[in-house]
Image 1 (cartoon, rainbow, N blue to C red):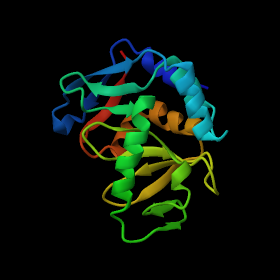
Image 2: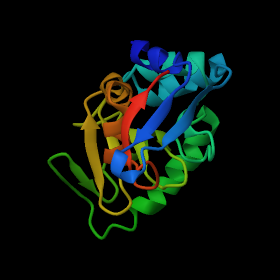
Image 3: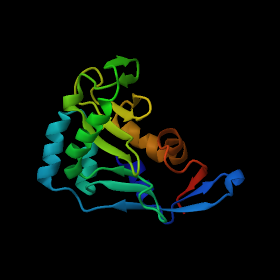
Image 4: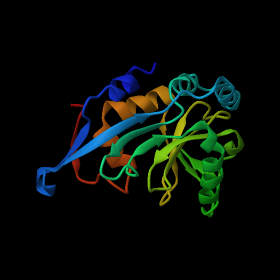
Length: 194
């Protein structure tokens, strides 16, 4: 279940390489773990998830949040899984962003404004130096699906489960960053774990 992530975390010298036409620079990276979340905090997460996912509780039993693909020269440039204690504040901040949309509706994989199932959603990940966030629907027609909020557009369903989301992240980090992170890593062409 966490194997793709564990493989990523085991990388001895992770780095991105920029495209040749952008100079071919190497960007040294760090993957940072933290102490496990408390049993009480994980139980609260499980309650919030309402049975919609089992991967996040397993992950938080190992590390209370993660910082992945953190630029060693500027660790704020990264993808992160939020510490459990920060999820409520991040959800409140994202709610404010969702309110800026003039309409509240769903159109296929796109969600504009505040979804009808927002109260039960769990905001669990994002990028440093950017308002973009990832959240999980725990109720309704999208139960168990992962959404990506882009502050310039809308929210989009990007994965049918947290496991599928981790596969996207770990399977092709370059494509993931280029698709979702518009603050940094514009010129990357390759990821190397060593």
